[in-house]
Each structure stands twice: as structure tokens, then as C-alpha cells.
Picture 1 (cartoon, one colour):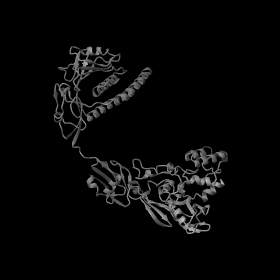
Picture 2 (tube, rainbow, N blue to C red; picture 1 turned 180 degrees about the horizontal axis):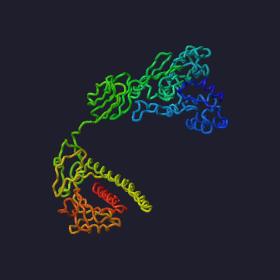
Picture 3 (cartoon, one colour; picture 1 turned 135 degrees about the horizontal axis):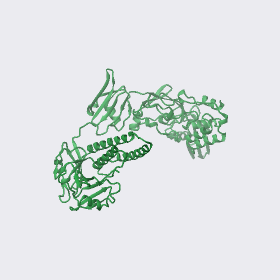
Picture 4 (cartoon, rainbow, N blue to C red; picture 1 turned 30 degrees about the horizontal axis):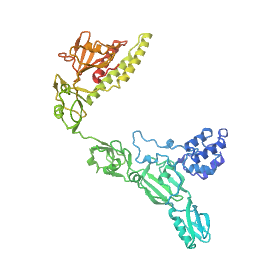
Length: 606
């Protein structure tokens, strides 16, 4: 075993088993050359190479425990700068696994960053002078003197002709004033004095309790408790408390810290650490989980066994729309659950292990209605529930010369969702039927494979089409007075003199309406059919959303009410593609789906 690694790790790096430090036997054949190791270490210390890059270079050719070429000073520097040393595990490898679906503890992200490895050593104005610190002293004028004085074990510095000066526990910002006042008792005139703290002695702190890597850590006396906790890997989110962190000095608590107070209010007690101080993280207290409906959906810890709903609300911050709260948990009498208005939740007592969610459960008493098409005035209205279509239309102003009021229709979200569901189900049935059709011969099997690939491609594209959710409310100038729903869009089509031709035609376009023209004429004006056109049945989408079918072979209309069916301005002609497939059932299924998509979305799915 490498003598330096073993002796140094035992004497200097006194860790508990939880620090996961492993010293392994050196493999001489795999050892990284001394110059390369020194170069990696020096680059890491100089900042030109990140800690992870340095350790990767060390481990790639060498082995995680081969530190024979690093001096003890370099080893300690790497350690004190928060860098992963050979033999240490990454934090992610030893963090506890949080239960799936369980929110993280409130405050856990305090230790998500890597600020301990980016820390810049500096001298804090509030730092208290301690034995081992170095002070630079200058005198000039009648007397010239310059020296660096080290604070001795009694807390004094010694200046010739003056004697010892007590500086222990003096703030760094006031040390110049103190030493100057002492020197003035000897040198009263014609002597200028300047005193400055050069270096501060690191302190060694013990970190214990439910943290990831408890042990002994070095830092500056003025370092924050967050710095030391981060060095230890942070608080164990499953066992440690974020609200009860004690700082012990000689067995007595000198400060208790609640990180919730820091997160919410920015309050952090100022502590000047001393050698052998202990940061003790207490066990986690009672916790309550907030799963939904809040700005802060976390696992909250309380400083008491029980807490009120009002206290939880101050932490979780429910969304403004919340009306009710659901709580489940266990009590001494057995399982407990309740669902109550948020106004009654303030006084409820919560206990350890409770889970709750905030819910918007008010039945909305207003409707948001949107207008599209040709009208005068605003396009959004809010009305009381229930409201009928006529009540809404009475508040809408139109220009009779511009608006086709007799062709009004509604787009409704619930109808669009239902259409989407029906189309998806039909596509799934089609895909299953294609893949389960038996093949009689090898040639037929090859054809089916190609057909299945084409059908799958069609299904993928068809599922991306979003239906319009049209609700037909007008026919022959009559408008049905139906109840409106939340989110309805009332469409008042503008009057037009055009017929729109699309789908499987050579030149999809819009043509001026001609009362003497037939469907065949409009198709001809659009360049005629393509080779893939299904010209036997053409869809006509009327301005009011109604659908008619024109059968060219019989030159007749096919509709639910075929009387008085004729092309009108604003209608749309859709020529669908012809389906060519091996089996009759596939042809029928594909044809049906193509018609469904055309009717629901006013588009042609190829």
C-alpha cells in the first residue's frame, strides 16, 4: 500500500465510514507518470482545469487511489477546495432515492449548486482575529518599521519597543484602529501607522447528523454554514432537518439555524466558527406533502409535531383559483381523509405524514364566448350561466350586407374532443385489421407488408389532424336556440361570391359562383381530377357546416335531406383520394376514415 496515501489519509483525513473513502492497493503497471499527475493537480489548483477534468485525467491512466506523486500540501489543498479526491464517491451515487411521485423537500435545492468548488477565499470584515493569523505592520516617518507579525497562542502580536498587543477576537475591520491606538501611546508624533490582516488561519469544523458525508472539514472562520453543509454533500433529504441545525462549541449550542427562515426571508445568522466547532443537523421533524395546486408543491417540515393549515398555506402558496383542499393521512383512530373549502382549512390540524392537494372545485357561473367571422364590436364576451344562443346573438351587431347570418354555426371544444376520439378509435381498428390479416402466399405476404407500412404512415399523419368540433345550428334560414357552453366559438360567416375547390384536383382554387354552373364545371375550372381522385362521390361543405355528397355517376345529391340541395356561394368542394388496397375491408375502412376526417376537419387526408 502506498505509504504516503495510507498514513496521510489516516492522520489527516479523519472521516467516518459514511465518507466512503477507499484506499486501494497501487497497481504499479497502471500508475500515471509522476509528471502527468503533478500537472493535473497543479492545473486543478490553478483553476485552468475543472476538478472533474483533473480527476478524470488522474483516473483514466492511473487508478483512483494512486496519490504517490502528490505532496501532502497539494492533497490538502485539493481537499479543502471541495474537489473530489481519488477514492471518494460522487454525491449522486450515494444520495437516497426519493419515492417516485414524492415531491422533494422544501429547501433541498439549496445544495444543488456547486458553489463550494467555485469559492474564492477572501477576508471578511467581520472576521475575528485568531491565533495563527498574520498581520502586516508598517511605520514610517520618524520611525521606519515593516514586518509581518503572527498572532501567538495567547492572542497577541509583539512589536519591538512597544511590546505585546492583544488582538484576539478583534474584527478584521477594526484591527488597524486598535493597533494604531496602542502604538500612539509610544509614538505620539511624526509617525504614520498602517496595519492590515494578511492571512486568516483555516478552522476545522465537524459536521454530524443526517448529512450525506459527515466528517471533518476545513474552511474559513467566516464561511457560511451553507458552505460547510455543501462540503458534506448537503442534508440527507429523507432523514435530515432543514429547520433544526445547531452549532455546538464545547458541547453547548451557540446558535440554532432554521433554513426555512433563510429561504423565505433571507435571514442567516452570522457565525464566526472556531476550531472543533460542531455543526449538528437534527433528525427530520413532522412533514406534510403538497402534491398539486400550489406554487410550492414540496414536502414541508414543521418545527412542531402538529401544524395548522394556515401555516402550511404560508409555505405552499396555493394558486389564486383554489377553492378546496383535500387531506389524507392517519390518526390514532385510524385512516383519515377530508375535503373542505379552503376557508375552513386554515384551522385544521395537520400531522406527520399527511398528504394534501389544493383544488379548483367551484362550478363556474360565467361563460367565456368567442366570436369569429363578420360582426361589429368585440370578439370576446363573458355571460352568466346558463345562456342560450339567441340571448347572445341579441347583443351582437352585424352588417346584413356583409354577414351571412343564416349560415351561423358553433365550434365547441367538447365536440372536437369527441370527434378526435372517434377518429382515433377508427384508425386503431384499421391498423389492427391490417396487421392481423392472414397471408395465403409469399407474394401476398410481401404485398401486405408494403400495404401495412403505407397504412401506418397514413395513421400517423391522420392522428395529427385536429377536428373543428362544428355544431350545426342553422338550416334554411332557421337557427336553433341551444344552450351555450364554456369556450364556445360562434362563427358568423361573411357573405361571399366564391366557391372553393380543394382536394384531389390539379389546381385547388376559389372560383366566382355561377348559378348556371354544375359541380362538374367547377371541377373543370380547377384543372380537373388528379389520377388519385375519387370522383364518384364529392363532399360539399356548406357555409353553415352542413355536409352534402355529390355522386357524379348518377349526377345526384346524397344527403340526409336531399331536397333543395344546391351549390351556394361560400360552399367548399372537397375531392377525396381513391383508396387502393388489397382487401375490400381495408378499402372500406380507409374510405370511411377519410370521409370522417374531411367532415370533422374540412381537410383532405391523403
